Image 1: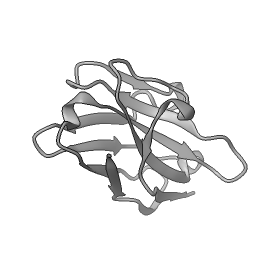
Image 2: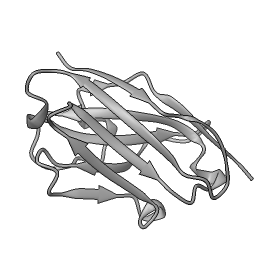
Image 3: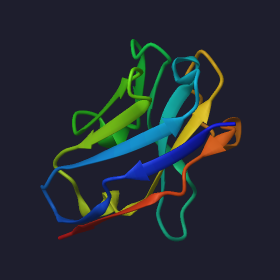
Image 4: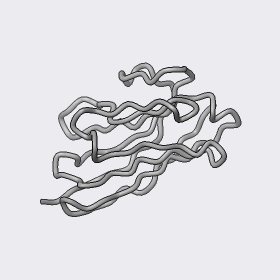
Length: 124
């Protein structure tokens, strides 16, 4: 069983940075691909960024490339999402998810474990 806890969300202004953290309670954290998803009201949940088990491979949604950076610290069982130059359209609930896999899957149904989510609101 994997438990994920997100933190770091909040209300910021357009252009501000924000860093999200996802802490996992599992012994074999380094065996899981971790991804960040987001869901805005009335929209489907979409994969924003993902990182492979070792951290050597990453994925980014086109709209966040160059602004968001995903990283992980396997010694701390934690994944981070550094979000820079935030835009109002980044407003959503952000979730981290874990998948016992070797590649970053992009569909929410492919992930077995989810955190409770953290709200990110970007004002214009």
